[in-house]
Image 1 (cartoon, one colour):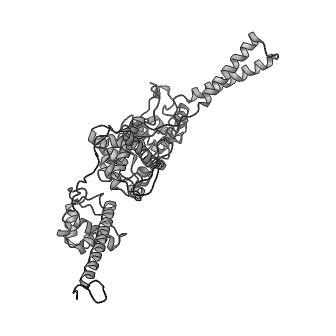
Image 2 (cartoon, one colour; image 1 turned 90 degrees about the vertical axis):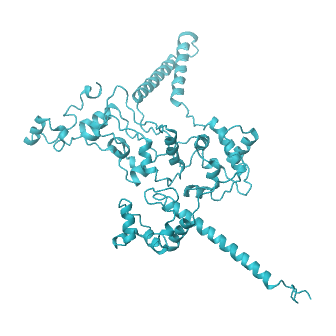
Image 3 (cartoon, one colour; image 1 turned 60 degrees about the vertical axis):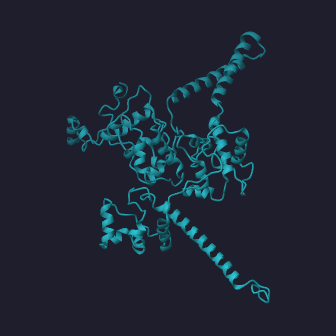
Length: 485
């Protein structure tokens, strides 16, 4: 009798036990990987603003080895509500608080014990990211074959499916045609620029292992092979040379001007030379209507010359005033710091942006893409080339210091509801009439403002009750030489 087989012909108990153990360890390993991934996502979402693992101190202390220095139960309490431990006089919590400039750690009472424990486990098991070995040339930025470029184009426009299943048109999010509305996703042109720049976007890493919530949600269901990403990189390298197509508006007014110019010319030629039309009144009507249209167009266009109300250009970075000035309550003068003492309000430098974005590395709408533009600009030593929106004619003088500082004029009075604008636009027409009306109607904060202390006669008239207020017009606001010196 064969000792390895039972009478019934079934496998021995040892083999079955080995199979069960293999399945158990596989499930356990899968569960650990899933828990580690959850901890990583929670850490990146909640902790990377203040902490690094293996990168040194940021706002808060370096976290590498913290699980060896502190008990897990204490870490759970401290992460949940550090202020509660500090107020209770916990010696370790107080020491950490004092060592970090007495900046209390944010409370995370919204996280469950399991979620906090997953963060702690992630920190405990964290290892430096190993450099991934690719089977394609990830450093290649040009010299692609036409076949590679064409295949990448077809993948980008969703004309062929991905090898691992699914199909989507990348251009449905990453537009290839300029738009007048804000698309938080980078355009195809921006992707191409970021890919081609020195120290730019690593498209293989971005698409293979998205690091922001925005990218994870957008690309979560698509698993592209390295070869497919290579083809898309080939298409983007070619697209960088082509650029995006813009919408061309039909020149209605110009065509109307030309049409009536032609009709008037024909009417004059027929009236003087050919004389095909019997009734001269028709010639007269055509000429008079044409002259009226030409005069109207000339007046309207001359009036609008130099005025750019509602001008809202595409900026090099999708900066939302609504998020910064509105939701986050950032003071206008934090970025435009010279408005109180300069003619111009100033455009913030890279350093001003990086005061926050050295810590805030991911945006709620754009992920890391737009913020990375600042970091790439800082590395290159070149400023971000913001496009000026409000621009007065050269013959007109305007000082922010005089209005914002001396006159105590609020930014919104001229620039409109900036805190509600995702795309910044010129709110007022900035015409001379608009300025004059403001100077006629605006009452100056005269009595409590040292800037106007030398206007003795007006102060005396206010005290005597001869006048009840002082407008900008009263102190020379309509003097031509004030603005046209």
